[in-house]
Image 1: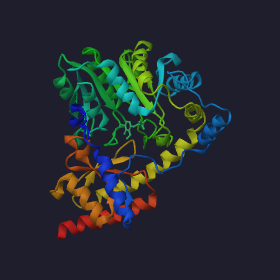
Image 2: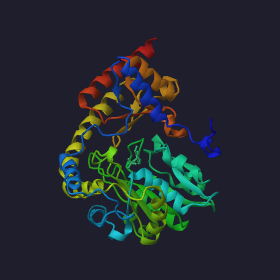
Image 3: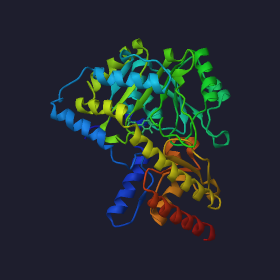
Image 4: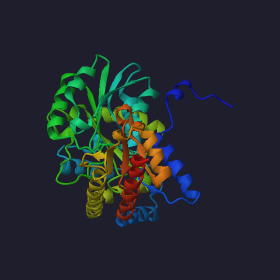
Amino acid sequence: MFNTAERMEALPFSGIRVMMERANKMQKEGRDIIHMEIGRPDFDTPEVIKKAANDSLAQGHVFYTSNYGTPELRAAIAEKLTKENGVEYKPEEILVTIGVGEGTYASMAAFLNPGDEVLVPNPVWLNYIHVPKFFGVVPVTYSLKEENDYQINMEEIESKITDKTKMMVINTPGNPTGTVQSRETLEKLAEIAKKHDLIVVADEIYEKLVYGGAKHVSIASLPGMKERTITLNGFSKCYSMTGWRLGYCAAPVEMIQGLVRVHQYINTCAASFVQDAGVTALREAEPDVQMMVKEYEKRRNYAVEALNAMEGISCKVPEGAFYIFVNVKSLGMTSAQVADYLLDEAGVACVPGSAFGTEGEGYIRLSYACSYERIVEAMNRMAKAFEELRTK
Ligand code: PMP
């Protein structure tokens, strides 16, 4: 038996995976489980994208590509960012990665020294808390609070900046709250980033999943921000391609040089035929994306109304992603206890908010990336289970 390296002690297994494994085990034992814990779309990857991958393989695109990614995909990404996000990028300013997961790691590996501090949201996708620890970097959290509509609070951010703060992570639309940070919030944040000379890592993986007229704003599009922003994005969520493992970083050329030095020694390049499929996703799959967005919105509207109709349970209307962050504080249980109770009593799997950081305590995260019919069933079961709790 070998001991893991000491740094591993600070790296727990993800609370999301723990719930998934428990739910899957119960399902195997014959229980009817509704999976609202999973952060992945339930749609198949659009046909046009799958065909592009098949064609690419048939044409023999099976070899290493440039470390940076294929010229075609880098050009398609630069064009997309220029057209859709209002930030002019050239292909040299794009690095193709194995998902945003790699982009997160590469950003911190390339630009942070031991002892540096990085500001990360709380609650948040946990990679932002744990990846810094690989490098002896200190994650300093800033709160996203329900009473502030989960918008970033500038006073808190300012109060947490020290002379060690080098980087700030933002995620909009956000996991787990589903919040879209407003233009006004991002403008204020941009001023702070410039004042304190911070690198901004902007995770925009849910950018197309916005509802009810909400608008996604890329912080890199604000004046003076492209120079200091690494925009992370990928194909997992909006194109339903979680298993394809494709993403990208967009940043000024000098920063891309830093990122590629990490990337070359970990992954060499993303899979060649997957990159070809990525070009097609960007150029041809928008109708498929819009179909999915429409369906998510329908599910969201139903679930939010059903949840708010349950006594003592409440949630804000999330404007983006496919998560609802549900306030369960009135039940007088920890969020882990609520999640366990729902799984055991109602067969509904969710993630305790505490799995996303301390500010998530008192909440559960429900993913509506499962069918409308199953969501209806889940809401009925949850209403019954909560009613039973109250009358016990
Ligand atoms: N960023 C956020 C905010 C996420 O929620 C997730 C997936 N849960 C990822 C990144 C992972 O992206 P990828 O599949 O591209 O690695």
